[in-house]
Image (tube, rainbow, N blue to C red; front, side):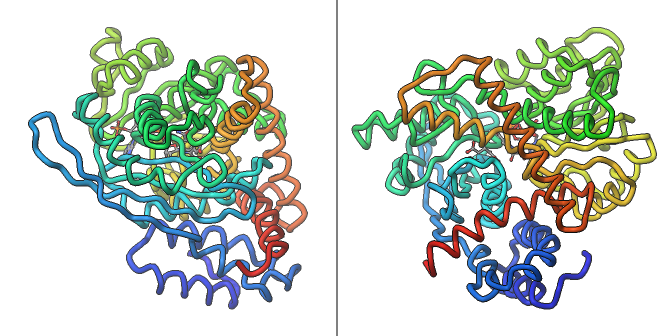
Length: 449
Ligand code: NDP
Ligand code: 2IT
């Protein structure tokens, strides 16, 4: 990793010492601190008030037992988390992840990133994340329901429309949000729609929330391309993952005239040179909860499935990593650059390793970091909160237009901030600084709390 300024290095060492073994959290902090050198030089008041030190320490961390009964009547135990990282700009806001890899370091990295992402949206939301090491794969709907009810039976006391507003992430979609909302409503005896986002359209949800992260990522990349006289038209695109973010990234790329030739899941990837069949993909993943290998089996022409290796071996003009953290490493970045890749948009959170990011930036690849590129999901969550607060329901067209405008705004702010702080074209620096300053200013204004 590149060096940090002395003061920032001290802060980083303190974070590592205080949070042993939480590698993803260390990585996320390091990446932000790498960008902040010119900011602390220009604003000594941030150091005087220990703003960065305070930002690196969550306001509150909750860890709890989640007991539930499986379909055989056996008692099962998982661990639940909610890290309420920073509420300087608004109530805590961020998703819940259900995946066996979840531990405190993952939740903290995601919660830390969320502070800056949410700030970049320009909406009044603080940063948080939560989840569990529960694995929804292979569980029945009834088991998922019992798990969600048990999870909310503890979480309900820590959340609320003005306190903390969770949503989905890996392993948490419309089904889980429904069970969580149902249990919250039952325990609290309140139809408090604003307590969760990503709700169904007939019970307080917003149009476009389901599509928002994938669409927003593509809008962000489209802005980077346009700023450089290019577009999606006729481009070969590879999208990793085949979950919520990936599916709606594919949909928007296709609308904009791009050809998506590959996507994946944690078992392997498919290459479909004629272009991914989205109807089939949605049926397979959203309805049947199947594996990507079944796509190759169902498609019936020369689609090939690769069960080992990396989806980044498939040559493309544009790469949209939309699965998970650290899924695209330095070797993958080299392969992509060699294959002629001109742009990368992070649909996932921190999918590119630090050496991968460095290689892309050095090669002049347009690189949209997750904090900026995937902010459309949480931004549309904030639009859902707005509709809930005013008991309103907007049309798809109106909501999508709002999302597109928000993504344009984020793009422009990142680009201008990168220019202002001496790193033109570097959206990583732009996103980190443009996300940081509003939070830091609010923390100064609110005093030492
Ligand atoms: P889903 O659960 O809908 O889909 C996740 C996809 O990524 C699946 O295809 C899954 O494959 C794959 N995946 C998950 N973990 C791994 C792993 N360890 N190794 C390889 N593949 C993996 O989640 P989302 O689409 O919602 O989330 C994807 C990414 O986008 C995450 O990084 C999330 O934090 C980020 N994100 C999500 C937002 C949202 O609104 N949902 C908003 C902003 C960012 P498999 O089914 O085999 O596990
Ligand atoms: O990482 C993310 O931004 C999300 N999972 C969405 C959070 C939200 O509150 O909509």
